[in-house]
Amino acid sequence: MGLAISTGGGLAALALLAPLTRRTDTLLALQDLTFQLQEVVLASRPAPPRPGDRVLSRSDLPWLQQQLKTADLTWLPRAEPLGDGRIRYIYKRRLDDPALSIAQIEDLRRNPPSHEAERAAIADLLTMLERVGVQVVIGAPRKARAAGEWEPSARTLRLRPDVIEKGSVEFARVLNHEAIHVAQSCRHGGLGARPRLLGLSMVLDPISQRHLEDPVYARASPSEISLEREAYANQNQLSLGPALLARECPAPGWRPWAPPAAAPAAR
Image (cartoon, rainbow, N blue to C red; front, side, top):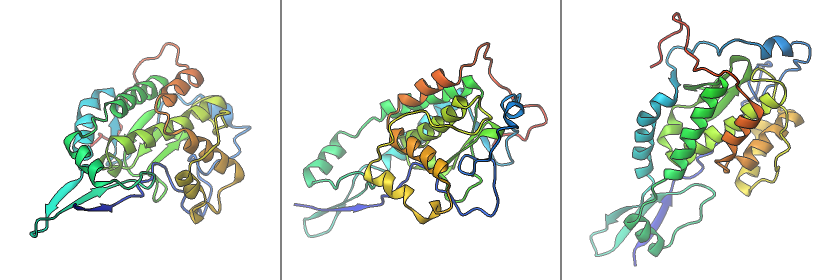
């Protein structure tokens, strides 16, 4: 019998709210835009990307999927001979995954998951986000510790660069979570609107509940917590994000958005 050691874990698929010194226009710091909503909704295009950002579109899918495939390999158990005839297995697992038995580890090594479903969902999400006019950016979010961030006034969805390194499962969850926030904005009038609940399930699994109970949410308003609860509760339904975008964010006469010539080059 070998010795199984699990390492890693806690790879959260969601932005955590850092304490705020002032109100911002990102998702978790919503303003009352009741009297400004119309001009925000009618914004013609996303904000230009910041220096160091990489705008992610459907044309980048081959690159992204190769990066994710490479990252997925790091989740496979690694065998280390101990020199006395025993073998030690080392593997990463997420907080919501159970520990593996030796038999399960050996089976996982022989039959690694393909994660084709997650990568297909990512492709669908990127296609729909581009279609409705959302700019998806690989770049540092404004909020510290955020894995993903939806900024309605900029029509920009940000993903922290190291989310790619966490593999297909985590990337799909983060992107789907933020897509739900985009649909929440569309429910209130358009991409530039402050989000509104969609009426989805609010039942959380224990890991998601722990995220919302983190002290970093202490200054979040009840409405902000409700929006996060709805996204958390449904982020694992990877087919839901594209369906919500199609329903809540119609884009008649859609054509691909191209950044203005003066915008900083994506890196």
